[in-house]
Amino acid sequence: MSNKASLWVALVASVIVGTLAVIALPAQPATPPPPPTAESPANGTAEVPTKRDATVTVDADAEVGPLNNPAEYQNQSGPSQLLGPADERRIAQLAPTVVRGWFKPESYYDHVTETYNFNYASSGGSSRFYTYADQLRRLSKRIFANFDQCDPELMTPDHPDECRTVLKNGIRHYKLRYPSLRYIELFNEPDKTWEPAVFERPAMNVEDYYTWYKIGYSVVNEINAELDPAVRLHIGGPAAYTFESEFTEQFLDLYRADPDPAKRLDFLSYHQYRNGAHPAAVATEKETARRWLSERGLNPDTPTFVTEYGVFPGTNTGTTFEEDLLAHAAAMSTLGYYYLQGGTDMVMHWVWDHGENDRKSMLVDGADGQVYPYYNVVAMQRKLKSRRLAAISDSLDDNGMGVNVVASRDRSGVAVLATNYQWIDGTSTYDVHLTINDLPHEYRNGNILVERYLVDATTSNYAFDPALSDLQRVERYELPPQASLTTSFQLDRNAVSLIVLTPF
Figure 1 (cartoon, rainbow, N blue to C red):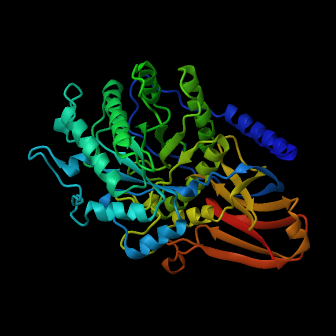
Figure 2 (tube, rainbow, N blue to C red):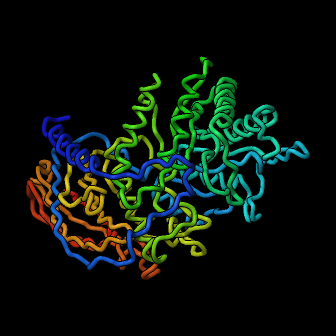
């Protein structure tokens, strides 16, 4: 890293640390918290719309390392949400590296007849599991499988043998059919504090979960030894419903105390839906996880995966469906920004097509190939370049509201993603003044193509105009050679814009 980049990193870090120091997060209650809900405005009175200026400065000569692009990591719902042909082409355009899907032991094994059907029908009978999993394989380089609980009759920690066999046979079968399967996440939100929905499995205490986790890692060790696959299986958990849960720390206590020399924790996983009103808080999660691991004598470099995140947990809503679509898209861009700042190893976009709450979907139900604003934001992330640049905005408040920016470059050009995040109750519009300094020599010796893409309430937005729901390029012009460039544009509330510079 250059001295200039180091100075930029120090400056950005000081701003973030100062910001996070004053965030007042709610204390963890002594009694179990209620089911997660989307945060609501403090009162029902909307602020008077305010127009502000934002100054954003990028140093194109100050690389701060590789860009761990959030667009590489994505989720799909279960087999009932099979993609149509045009939907599949849409996701292929996003080129995800890792895709997480759902593998259900209680569906592929009938404990009454003691028979397996690995190509079982979805709950609605509309698809077969292989068709679903084949899509995951085609659309990713690596499959991330959440293996959920066995049939409730088999979930007895004192007598786990049958479920252990079911888990091993399932993981082994799907690994043989899908060699790109790498990650096994054991169970989903075992620490849930709400009454499970029909498609959810019951909560369990952390001791019972760890009993099953021990079984999980022993199964993975056996399969790796038996198959010796080119892509070896990794296992992790506990897939807690939120980072703030004590469950994860208690899980780490049990892992530390486990005397088995073959124990393994290839990644630590959890979900995060609590930070719609203060997204900046997630920037410290990676460092907190490192501290938890270090305090227990465990490897602090254990990868940390946020396997689901967002701002509308479950079937929660904000204001109107149309406004929530945009708020969710801007939130995912903003949370991605802060997870980048904090160094989290993998944050997985949720979701291609949600079965119960479409405000979290990239794709439009019943309209094959049509997309919501969220898809277009991920498409803009995918246009970012491979190396991250030093960048700073003067218009982010202590909670992470305002204009955040991710800047990047490679040999093909420079790309800058700017988001005006206002959650569900902010009303600020920004005139953004973007300056990109110290452009490389190719920009000084040849012309520059400038392109800008936009997602807002009336642009690239299915809810406003289905005919123009694709990502819209709103500006395209050429500039003569120059070492620095300044451009201005407006970002309305929860708008996201990508600026791309290409030398020619």
